[in-house]
Length: 295
Length: 336
Image (cartoon, rainbow over all chains, first blue to last red; front, side, top):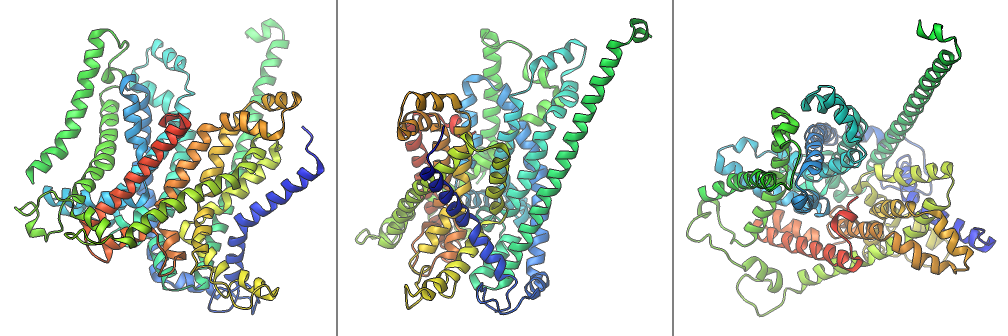
């Protein structure tokens, strides 16, 4: 287990190059967001400015797109998480003989290129809404939500399924023996058990929806989301305002990640404290006189 | 027209009925035991499960795919003639992909054919490259990194992926443009007198694509290697196995599902990437997805676009099947 000094140096070098590749481009872009020239430029730094952030927030299309993206993200969460949950539960209940076919169908969107999902959604719903007289459903937001839901539901299902497989069936049996009905078991035992998985599925669903481009660009029709506006801007030419957007996104995420970390540590600490208190109480009870414990 | 609708509503219904009939049959045959579906979940929850999954599987996944395939075999017609006598199945959209014309078969449509094979070839190359780049780090993270170090590494890895695909591609444009920092360094050090046209030569595109999907490779690899018992590696080392034996005969076979899953994901995302070619490609860049996009929104020929999309879909399916066959795996093993 002792790599030689040569190997160690090589590995350190490799790691350094790897992370330079991974983070370098973003760092370069971030610097260009604060530099004054019109074209995103890193060096020489001609002056430090926040104008590009102002330009970004003054860009009305971008802000409309942002609102649209947030709205679509929320709708996708509301659709994909319940579907993913249903998909996972069905997976555990479906007849073993057809399980692999079912799995193939519902996981296929994960392995389908995004543009194909976008195209097929538009093609189908254009025909379907035309034939059923529900033309009002042929709308960019509806189609985008449906298109994104196809693969995001599959992500949610996989997350929920991973936790569902650790579910202890004896808990369910105990509840049933104690007279609970199946719906009660679902509501009071299964759902609370799945809560962490549901929460992470919701977060993942929102983020995947928010940053999706390939499916959205087809399904959004004449509306605009943040990513499609952004793609248009980038094709028109490079401006540091685009770099500024990246900086805003990274900073928001890092703050979010840190807040989550702190919240989780506090929750862990609180849980540990509760456990300690319970143990101490139990010990005190055990060491006390039997009469006291009985009383 | 009404035949279509009958199919759209009839297919899901038929499948659901089939499932319940199948369940009833199994129950009678004594294969299945325990409570029935609605008894098990209650009526309300049972209905929610069936409706949610039915809507997802049929109206969101299967029927749209079928509609796209169906459209790809139809001619381009004005809306008034759809479903009319001219609306017959045809191969003209596929003929156009091969020959650049819906009728003549004299000349090959080299531009589109080349773009297609270049896309597939480059996607395979990028997949292999990403595997080579990610493997050492995934191995280190899974087998020898301390817990604290692992946390930092994971955070650093995930950080770039909060930034969306277009911005990641844009970062490469800032980096590699003729006035970009790489060209400044090259010229400053006297290696070149003129700026190198990275973007025109598609270096930017390939680098950006490899960069965009690095994470899709490293996490499946990491998960697979992490489940390998460290003692196995230790034992092999004690028995005198050289380092490459350990990798070739212990780690790689164990990580097979992770490798297959990483490769499938990276290939699929690269071949289907639209943002990077749009942002980093020049006017002469050959990539298949922008061609598909243009069929829809430049040529306004939807059936042709559907045919092109179907060609892409089939090649992705073929790739997944080949990978599964080569690694002797089932689909369930790679989509964890």
